Length: 265
Image 1 (spheres, rainbow, N blue to C red):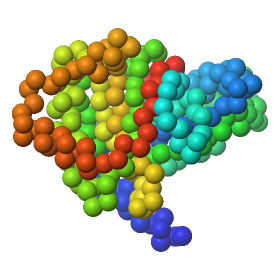
Image 2 (cartoon, one colour; image 1 turned 90 degrees about the horizontal axis):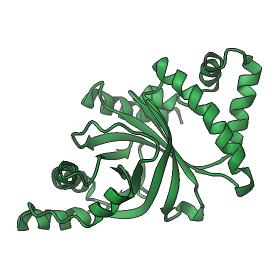
Image 3 (spheres, rainbow, N blue to C red; image 1 turned 90 degrees about the vertical axis):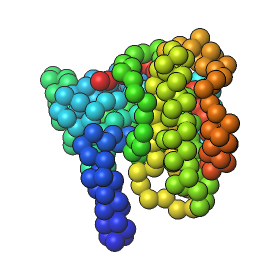
Image 4 (cartoon, rainbow, N blue to C red; image 1 turned 30 degrees about the vertical axis):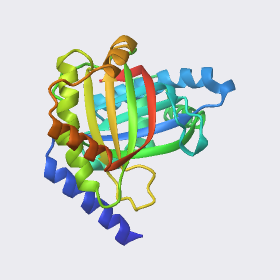
């Protein structure tokens, strides 16, 4: 076990040093809440948002989002209602993101009249309110050139992919060299707001359910549906062949359409 942890952190730090301080690490948590507890959970998410605001001010995180899922194929047959996205500047902060004592300290700063015991219980109650079925640790590999500011009400599709065995590098190259310029042209045509490409940050075996994810961001449903009709007139026949090769290098496992409910920046 010790050897496995050593390999894990060597992998994370190698990636961190390769890309530098601006590299972004992301934790996605797909959440299921029982129907009779949704209203209670929504009250706790406001509490957590205030705690995360302090966490950002203290430099523990770069940001936090809560998205409500509108549609998608369910992992493991689960019916998810929400996904949270927490952003970090380095892998160590990412791995320490669920440290209870740090969360309690941030909660006390967010709510000065709350004791440590009360803060700890409130956090436990908030976490117990939902069933965390899936947690993905990821690192951002590429993104479009945009300055879009996330605001409640925007849309995003979370597309989880699995690179075909033996075509891992081919798939990443296709996303960065073929699909990224395509999405940049969409942004320039006001048919998309932002696009990000992420890979799993932790070592995975051949049985991993997904290895990568793209996050496609839209201002509203009108832009989303217009984007679906977009025909890239600039693409050449050679580039079209590269697109097809890229599609064949990965298996699109799940797609979730979500609306941003709460954002901390």
